[in-house]
Image 1 (cartoon, rainbow over the protein chains, first blue to last red):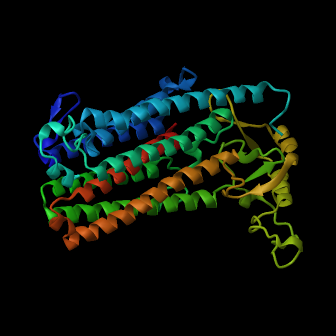
Image 2 (cartoon, rainbow over the protein chains, first blue to last red):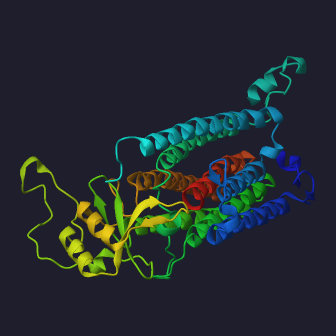
Image 3 (tube, rainbow over the protein chains, first blue to last red):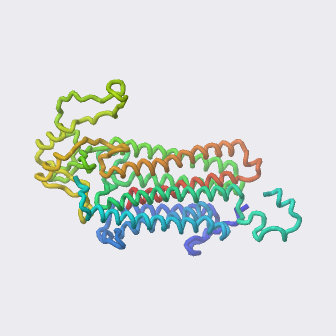
Length: 127
Length: 326
C-alpha cells in the first residue's frame, strides 16, 4: 500500500527524515513550537505588535498566519495530503481555499459596515 | 472496484489513473469529501462569529479576562494556559493516531492497538477539559448587572483596578420574591433559579462602597474596557435591570450576549465532534483487538477514522485562535 509512498521531506526539502515515524515526531515538535510561540505572544502581547495593519492588530495577523501554518502541516503530514495525487489534493484543497476566504471577506466587510452604521447612526445603542 | 478491475480485459480500457483514478479507495475519498463539507460548516460558524465580532468590535469581551481558570489554582489569574494545555493534548492524540495509521501500514497489530488506546485517552482528556471549561464559564466569577439596552456593567475597585464580585459587596435585603414555578401561576411558565443577590442589594452595596466604580463593555483606543468615574457610575447603575451571574444562552456576565451564544455553539459543536470521534475510535479499537483488519488484510479503516480525528484537531486549531488568541 501507500506505506512506501511517503514523501519524507518537509520545509521544501530542507529537512529530510529517514522514516515516516521520524517525520511524525518532527512535525509534532514543529507544531508544539508554533503553539508555544502563539501562547507566549498571547500572554506577553508585545507593544510593538499592537499596531494596526489592514484594520486589524499586527498580533492578530501573526496569530492567523501561524494558525494557517499549523493547519498546513496537520493536513499535509498527519492527513497525508502530501502523498496524494495532485488531482485529489486539488479536489480537497481548492474548494476550501476559494470558498473560505470569499465567505470571510464578504461577511466581515458587511459587519464592518453595520458597525459604522450603528456607531454613527441616530439611534443610541448604549443605554 | 476490485471486481471491475478483474473483469476488464485490457489495460487500455482503463482511465488514465487506473481503476482507482485518484489512487484512493472509495471509502477514503468519501471521508475526505465529508471532511471538506464539514470544514465548510465550521467555516460558516466561525465566520458568523467573526461577523458578530466585527459588528460589535468596540464592545466585544476580552478573552484573556474571561478564561482565566486553571485546575487547582484558585484565584490565580492564568489566562490561556489551560486552553494551551488542551491544544497540546489534542495535538498529541493526533500524533498517536497517525502513528497507529503508520503501524497499520506495516500490519503491526500490537502497535496499532497501543496507539489507538493512547488516542482514545487523549480524546477523553480533551472532552473532560472542555466540560470543565464550560462549567467555569457557566458558573461565572464576579457577576454583573445588565441594563435595559443589554449592556453589561461590571464592577472594579477604583484604586487597584481589580474586579469586584457582586456577591461580596451586595447588601442582603429581605425579599418575598421566590423562584416562579410552573405549578403556581398561569400559563405554566417557570423561570430559572434566581440570582444569589437581588438587584436592590447590589445597588445599595454599590452606593455604600465608595471605592467601587463601573466598568462598561465599551473598549477604549487601547483595547481596554472603559472604566467610569464614581459620579458617572452612580448615574449608570440606575439604568440596570438584571443581576447576571455566569452565562446562559440569554445573557452572560462577560459582555455581549452573542459572545456566550457563539462560545456554547462552536465549542459545543466541536466537542460533539470530539465525542463522536472518541466513540468511533473505540469501535475501531475493538475491531483491531478482534483482528478484523488482520483478516481483511489491511488497516484502511484506521486510516479513515484517523482522517476524521485529524480533522477534529484541525478545527480546534482554528477555534483556539479565534476564540482565545485573537
